[in-house]
Length: 176
Image (cartoon, rainbow, N blue to C red; front, side, top):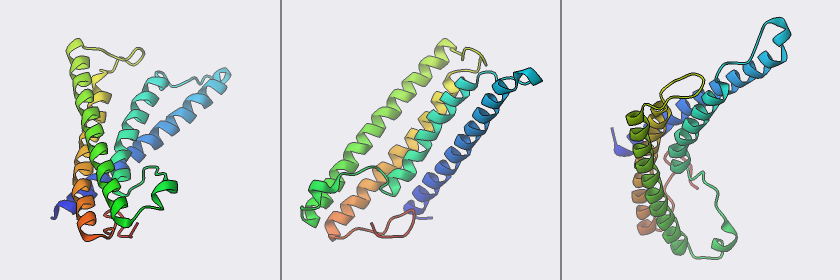
């Protein structure tokens, strides 16, 4: 298996998992709101719904980052760079990829230390009492994958700079 296919698989699998978690959070939120509306019929809100939303959405955001990075899905402002040469745009792409990798690495590092603190102090959520290190660990793993994908994309952008043309997008096979 080539490194690019492993990277694509990791990014895709994490995005799918993030989508499943986000869909579960949406269903749980609808159930909780509906339960509040029908308390007179014996229903009620889902206990700890806001805790589950925080943990689930936090993980989903980090789970979507690798796929977004792989497919150049981040917001860009082309109003100025449209007037630059292809080479200048390739250099900008490479520099932003390096910057993104550094930022994702710092985020992963801080999530790791946050996870260790939550684990060391035995902190739990208020209502459900689940260990707070669990969502930190999930976000940490996703941020490590995002950092790996971003580091790989540095090599892709470097090859684009050398070749002078964009490479086919890894996730979809199209040219950007």
